[in-house]
Length: 362
Image (cartoon, rainbow, N blue to C red; front, side, top):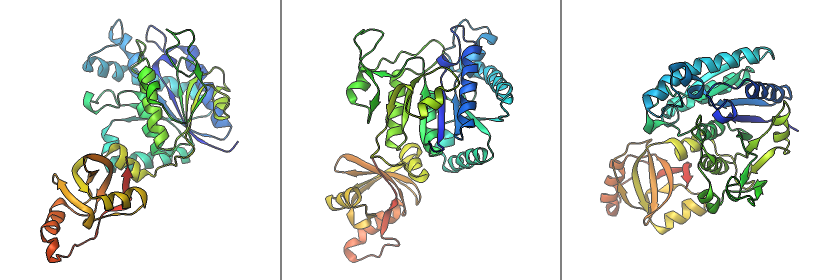
């Protein structure tokens, strides 16, 4: 088995007890398994929930707070407790953890996105174990990841992981809710996430976590689009992650081998960039950029909407259907000038409006 770069996502329900405290048995089990995975030569990045769950009791809350200020205060207390526990536990294996707290803005702002990539790469090269969580103490609700399932996917894409492991408290995906239907069939392997499975998913998170099975399916669907194999399931013992990486885990494997990894620049365009305008193209341009791998040329543009500058990201539409996103080489003003004077053979400063290397099909 070759060395892999693995992202391991540990949710609150897999880390804490029902009272919201860190469960020492669960915690130690995860520590032993991650240390064993590293000892077998694999690179590991952790995405760990548990800050809010670990902290809310210290604030006097009887259960996980539902207000934003309550969550942020609990995270401020709990994150320190959580990373202290990780530092102490990994020290026995000679592993140095690094705490990284991310917000949505760290992905949507291109410079911060590149910085996050470079920081994680440097840590892994120096054999440090990154432990990532959302920065709940400063995140505003409209700029959150929603849950750490989504954060783990975006991190996996950012570092071009070979596998994403989402540890949960059930042994994989079923064709219906096994808590309701005793005849529910376990799904051991999928090449994609069917719509009917998404619709049937019961989004029933625990009282200490935020994610449910539906959030895991959404995350897995995005991971598949990025060419990242996903495992969703459970395990016990120090060899549980080794078994998962070897294909013998107790859960569901999701992998579409036909989809290839997407480079960092295209990931940013597809998943994180702000859309600043729209470009409508004709049939010829649609055929060229979707099926022939060509760049979008000015001659194929029928209409533009909005104001955008060179380097901005826009949606590209054929008729009324969005077919992709791309980073423009020309501003909306330059394109409008050309469209007005095109019949007079007005020269364009650049013929390619969106280069094929800065284009993502949706």
